[in-house]
Image (tube, rainbow, N blue to C red; front, side):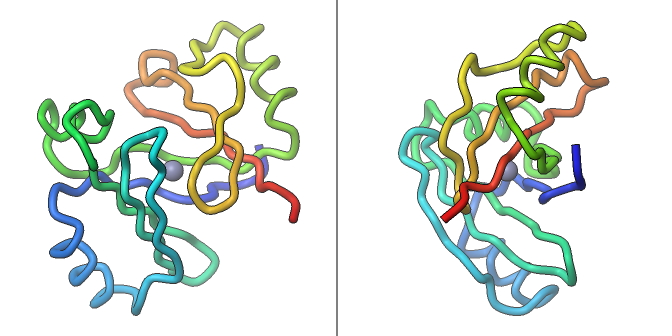
Length: 133
Ligand code: ZN
């Protein structure tokens, strides 16, 4: 793993959250809806770091379920990897439980995979490999 790519924060009201985070970091650099994950995402830059806000677009969204259970807050830590297939294979062999079998398309031009929080002391880990354009 190369570095922390971003922190994901679950929010229940994107409009309100966007105002708060705009006050912290300035205007977001990207907004994207990921239909397959049923989330709206808004990305902010803070120096070299990124913050991703996540809002559910439907009741079946993992973000809706997360907020119902735990409330708003830090949802995941994303780590950038060089080769996501290789990293997934390495973690699988090491006994980590991956939440998807194959990399899937995430927001912000990334191929992603989640690691179950049960495997990492309660932290949901996202692996992400930037899609070369
Ligand atoms: Zn993320």
